Length: 70
Image (cartoon, rainbow, N blue to C red; front, side):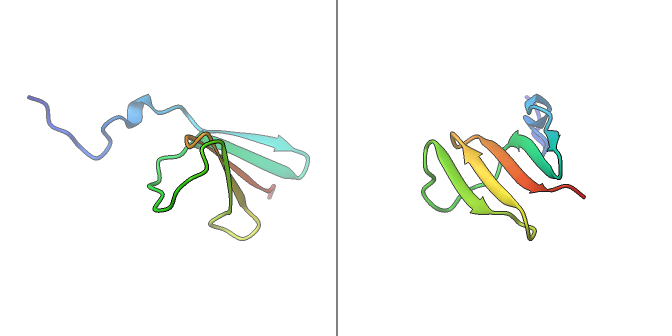
């Protein structure tokens, strides 16, 4: 019997990475948040958590966060 902790399965998650295009940054990561609304199956756009950020959810799985570089 195994014990489960809160990090179960996280070791198999891909590492997020950031791309920089001039004065813009794109962070690519897996989306682990629970969405309490119906999500478009191909692409979903939303405002980010911080001002100036745009979140793009691709195929209900990949989250792209677009922002200005600091």
